[in-house]
Length: 182
Image (cartoon, rainbow, N blue to C red; front, side, top):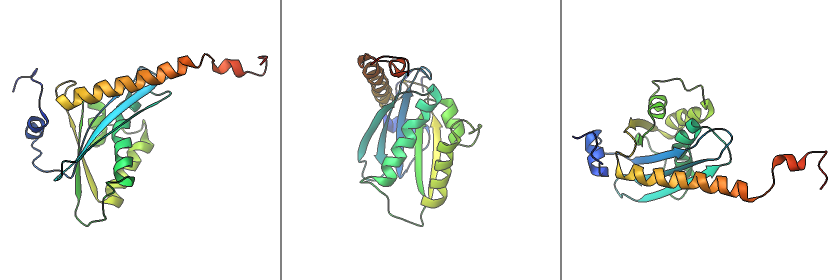
């Protein structure tokens, strides 16, 4: 397989040898640093029915690493509490995550420190224990998967929209200081 070839979802599943899954997450985050907003987007695909849902959004501030892990966290909150809320089962549900962030893949597979945003990772661990889920994180280079290009664009647009809304307000936090005459 060519390193530059853009993969379809079917080809990516074959590449990672994922014959069956209960939930598949393909997401991306967009950020530049703590002084700017971050955006994220994730596509959830339910195994069997192939039902799809897109979740996306933005935060007013955050790091690139937070932007990269947030799509999967937000998607899982939606999955576990929204209309697809899974029934309790004794059978382990396998959740595959395809990410273009090496650090998120390593952290998700417990191969790197999770100290940064430990609370987020603690929730993933709790979901494994209490909801009988098993997470499998897979790394795939940016723009290598058609679906990743979609969420990359949506996460960037979410970040830019957040930053635009902040600048459109025309006021800064310093406008509300005790010495500022209103």
